[in-house]
Image 1 (cartoon, one colour):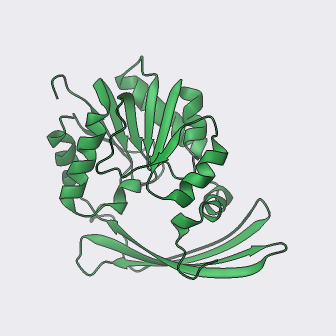
Image 2: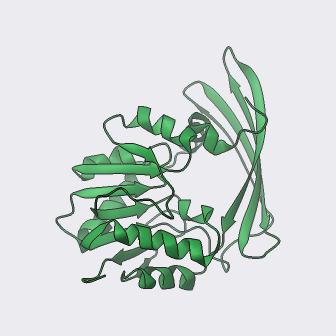
Length: 246
């Protein structure tokens, strides 16, 4: 493995970590489907932005007759194509993608939105989501932490075994020097039978948008907006509906 590899370049390791830690993609997809249909009961088509290795798409494909995914990391898409071979997935940037088709719902989960930087990126992304929605279509977005509930100097660690691969992960997260993002330094040690042990390190800088930042981006994109707490693992969900004429 290249010493410069990041976790998004090695989707099979990413997949092993979160499946090994018990991330409940099925339950999360069920909450997403509930909130899409609560706002658009006839919804049949859905786009998963930042689809990663396809963990949610597996289950969303059971809920909606037409699903599709995009992601910027080819290493994640390689795994998604194996995980959900019947679902079209492709490389695209959430800030300016143009698929030439509109959907009943656009979702962006697992805090993929945190990979952006600055309000301009957030506004462009929500505008892209809205552009790909039918009138009355629904956006569901899982945010990264807000400035007020982010925990600086956090140390995390886990060891998991999945599909014969054992992965140890240790992380340290601090407030980025500009104060508007978190910086997480992570070291991975990976062991596989017949391949021995390898290790690499990675750094994730994730935008700490406020609730008001998200809400204003939804509004500027011509979407209603509400924040849903208590039903979804992590930091909640933002939901919005494309208004007529937007």
